[in-house]
Length: 393
Image: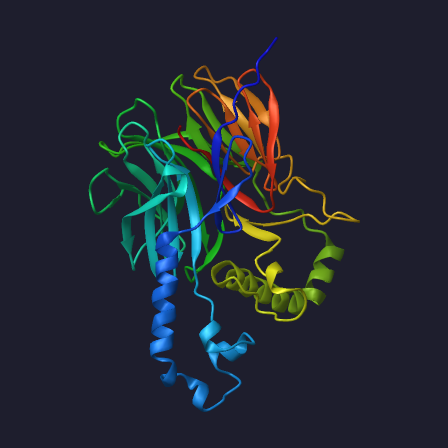
């Protein structure tokens, strides 16, 4: 008679909120104490200086009136951009952005306490990861020119150092276990036009970096695929997500003619949707005020994942709970030291692996647990999940 194995404590990022689920208990939201303090300070500042606002002239084009509400009710831009399990039991680390401010914070005791690790008004940091052995942080530093470098913050130190450079987008770093200061991450070249403006990312490859010697090694690279979110276990097995790289489609005359006719309309619609997405993501409000109650404003139905705008699928009758948000061609693979590759799961948007070999992954609308013996279990269903992590116990 087999005994049921206990369910782990997990954290996931869904629609800009940190969610924690312990065992069979329902998932709950972890509020950001630092984020709440930013909101409180901003509200006090608005109240203090409200007499200076444009309410005197009654202009319908004031910032608040554009949202169909008073200035005192204006939303405070706040976005939690990444999470990961921390070094201590019951702890996690997350990155937060509010306007130009970015901060790294650690939550302990499953949300009971919070402390600030770092903050700055000039730097954006995302995809943070913690070394369970040393407590050192590694992350992606986003630049305004469309590039991203790998950054490192040593445990106990105040500042950080950028370890990579160049016209590339380096992100999703992880420490290699028992390998000193070696890091594995995904990297893509940035394509630009003659004016230097961003066009597209090239295929993502997997790179290994020795932080002490600055030696870089290419682990996986193929013009047909993107290789994403690498993670290496103590036994040398490397896990990663593989998806097809979107090459230029074959040119069809009728399709070209249709594209020419519809180009002006598509351009206007694309610009509006682009602005609408970022307005909703960073302010919690869409640019349109018509339709639907306020509670549905953060129900975006789309999010940016690894440079792709992923849209929620709309089945014919009612929305299918737990349906795959990404195609089945997004596969989680395992590669051994000998080079043998095995497919672990399909329709994988993000994943994590604990020290016992348990795999936690999401298709964007549900979270699954895959145990070493092959047993698979759905832990929860929730919409628009971006990241999943084990919380150490």
